[in-house]
Image 1 (cartoon, rainbow, N blue to C red):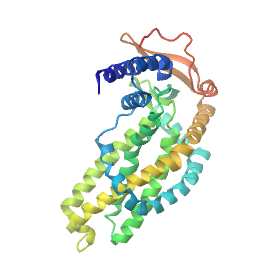
Image 2 (image 1 turned 30 degrees about the vertical axis):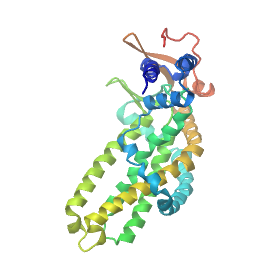
Image 3 (image 1 turned 90 degrees about the vertical axis):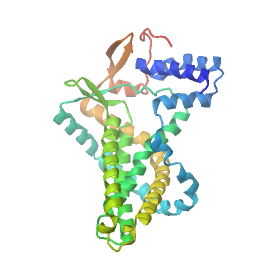
Image 4 (image 1 turned 180 degrees about the horizontal axis):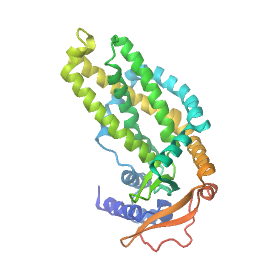
Length: 326
């Protein structure tokens, strides 16, 4: 990072720290980028890195690009079946309002309220969409290994293990992808008792991430230690064969994850998100609040009904916004 990049990064960070969507200061940030001679691609990359940083788990998937021509042969059948299954799962969870009922159940059990908070990435650069997909992929990919390791303990032959784990993986990814797409919105669970706000999308990711991660560590460790005893005389009981199979599943699932992004999130996620958001409006009629910070003071300000927010194209007109400077 050059000094001017760090300078622009600090400007964007100050906007995000204030709790105001980037769109509010888009003109000022663009002017600052031009003054610093930062091109649009670099500008978008800096903003995306602050909004959705990539970690070690993302770069762990990069070798799949090298083996993609070979692994694509294995990933293609799974990707085709997945693309066909998304619509039935969407019909069950969204059209039949099963996900809405689950949100209502969470609301009743936890005594949380459903409100809206404008997302901070509103108005971010176009490259943000690419990195958003990359940021979302690890859970989709690691679910493949998770499904494979669970099925591996069943008394099945190696070929049956692959078929059953593929079916289990297809089911998990289709359901979780629809849920994640539906919750990629401004909806937030508000917990007045513990004074916290929990975005619906982060609730899903926070529940999946640790569960899948801990499960993978446990299943991998157990298989490597007791592999030959768990699958005595079996090809997959050999530690070398098992490790190779895990890598193949990992990188094949990466190719499938890319296909999921194009086959579902790019084409259908907006429709699923808006449908679910409208269902919440009709059921609970929540308010949209602006959660801001200024000079050490936190403030939650009511803006409008979520219905009005949706009708306005999910944008805020800052006619008399907070007195904050970039």
